[in-house]
Length: 143
Image 1 (tube, rainbow, N blue to C red):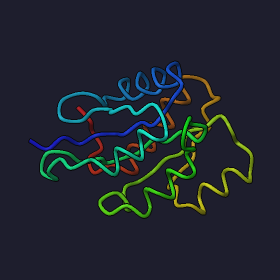
Image 2: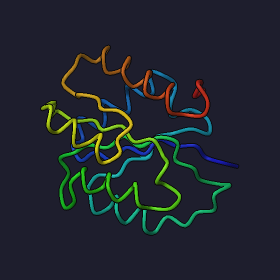
Image 3: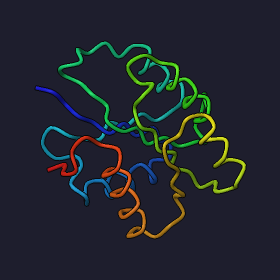
């Protein structure tokens, strides 16, 4: 059975819980679709290098990527994803507390599909994640 997943790369446990809860409020995490969490940049690189599950079983539909990660920063991970066969076309949404224009611009230059500032209300975060999920995943309902 194919698993369609959202890959969340986030080192802050509070932010990860908040994002996962917001996705669950939208129905992600039910049935065959769920959120897979990676907690640091090197583990993310290792995931893309070593993920050899058969395509019919495992598919990442959306990557939510923090910028400020230990070991390897999110911008370097984004560049790596864009060069990695099997993931180069996967939609990537940057999620960061950094909303500086130069940072946002760099993310788009490196191939981000969208950028969400994390410093918003919970309801706003749920709304933004729903919009991203609806835009970049193959099916609009996660349940």
